[in-house]
Image (tube, rainbow, N blue to C red; front, side):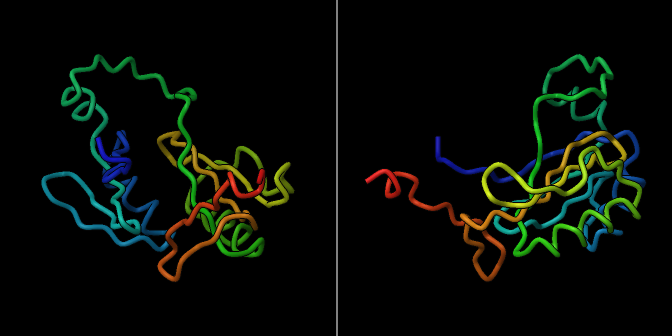
Length: 146
C-alpha cells in the first residue's frame, strides 16, 4: 500500500448545510449525486450523507457524534492566519472547542468542530514548511538527533 491519502470523506447529516459551511470558509465544491467534492491540495475532502457512508462501508451507524478519535488539521503560514481561519469558522457556524493558543512545540493552534462535529485543528508550526501550493513538507526528524 502506498503511503498517501487520496480522499477524506466526512459523513454529514445534511449535505447542503455542510457544503454551505465549508463554502463560507472559502472552499469551492462540486456536487455530484448528492456528494460534494472539494479539491484540497493533492487530495480531496468529500461530504456524503452519513447513512450512505456507513452503509457503503458495511457499518452500523450508531449515530454518535462524540469524539471519534480523529482530527483534521490545516497548517497555515502565520499566527495571524490561525486567528483569521478560526474567526471565519466561528462566523460560519463552527463551535470553537479550544481557542487559538501557544503550543508545547512552539507553535500556535486552535480547534473547532464543524456543524456535524468533525474536529479541525488550525495550526501554525514554525518547524514545518509549507510549499507554494500549501503542501506540508515534513522536516527530517532524524537530522535533529544526529
